[in-house]
Image 1 (cartoon, rainbow, N blue to C red):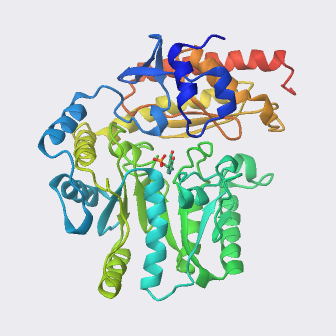
Image 2: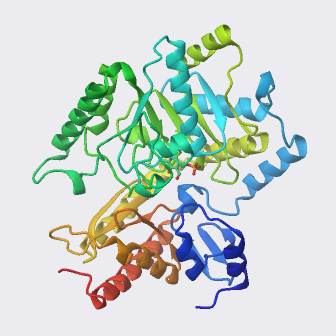
Image 3: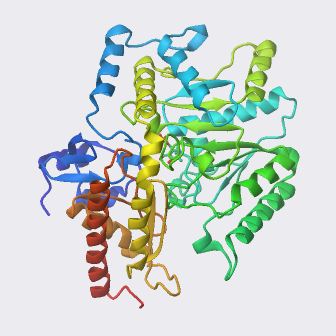
Length: 461
Ligand SMILES: Cc1ncc(COP(=O)(O)O)c(C=O)c1O
């Protein structure tokens, strides 16, 4: 395989995040050059449907001139101002006001940062700080779920539950605990209903809290739908039962809406689709449709009052970033929220969901697909060697990676997730025709993967 000049320069210069670096030296990267609507184009001019909205984030697609203009106008007016030491600027104030208005739970304030990882890291720091302020310094342990993904800084990586994010990074840190993954297809017992599985997971969580000591457990963090862990939709009644256990032991509940927020599941926030009532919320990605990095946490009053009390006691609230609430990012996020509202984005997503999910569900009949699962405008397809026994492929065979390469050949960017799951999560602006086109391309990639897997004798059926 001959690599393009840019690919060679890439290999000689970049350390890629979340990538098999040895393999990349052989295959080279896919170098993208431009984008328009739901399409991106590589450096050789080939077009692809961006079936992953970048990394679950480019909700309004590419080339949105209003967002470009919002950034340019703010750069001309005030390209930078910070929020340290009591400084402020109107894009951050207006954005916080807007977020308070649309929040799905009562919130008091918004803390801005730059990435989903920073948001979740900040959540953890704020919970620790709050519990010190509240005079319970032992209450510090954080519980997350196996196969969760909450980012890759040290604390966010500690609450993530994927093997490659821990192994040889010496993570998780002490004090970070994990409870069961709510994936019915893989982890329910034979004949166990979704409700019974949810009850069992709630009992497991309660046992963990009791074993550790409720006075040492500070918070529980969850994504409404697990994205990077494999598009895992929790079983019916899951969040009601889990949050009830947290309530019983005064465990603060953090909702990571980094993927699910702003319309992805057909609701403004993912928690609204799943009957999930958290205490605080992390937001990022579609907040600015990924035109610029911006993230935040929606802070409830109990937490805010604790922060203010600490300032009365010890002075400065010593957390934050140079670019917390960066004015250009904030102006772009404000424009993004304005577009979502004006275009009635949630209603438009809802109107497209039946077609999207019908096309996704139809792939459950494919011989390679053990489970086709989805909600809103996201779906995952778990590839198996044997549909009847649910036998997985040997990870070393790289079946989902092969499928993603074949999808690229078909002009579709999809993503291989743990458990040989192929995910799609296109920009929310995708049209009905484009949805059909995307699933046609995915179907062809699956057919070609199946032919290859049969040739390689990987199928046990
Ligand atoms: C649910 C969730 N939380 C947090 C993150 C981390 O976000 P970032 O990569 O912006 O740090 C991600 C990234 O995909 C995510 O999916």
